[in-house]
Image (cartoon, rainbow, N blue to C red; front, side, top):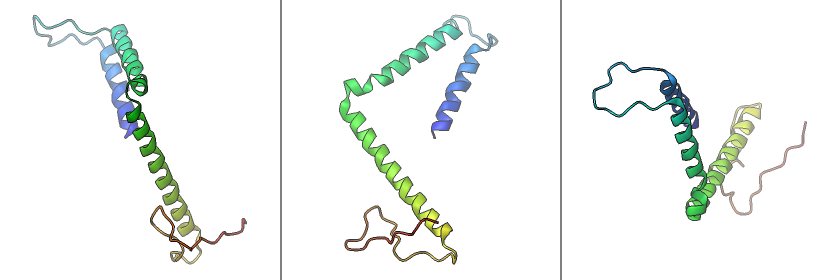
Length: 113
């Protein structure tokens, strides 16, 4: 998703730099120059950076969401690694798919090697 946002951003900058005046209707506003586009992008980035100062609750919620996504991604990677590492290909009974382990059951620690 982030890749698509970056791609659209850079593509729009390339389109703003290209001198395309064909098809401009009379009376329409003048085209935006490359320096004006860069200045506007810099101001937009500064505005987004100041969001945490204006609305700290939004930043706290976003940070919590990223931490949750990160912990679920780590858990999924751990499960996938254990499934791929298992020689027989059968799922280990101690692996849970939830983010909270069952009470009283701890996953066995495998020795390195």
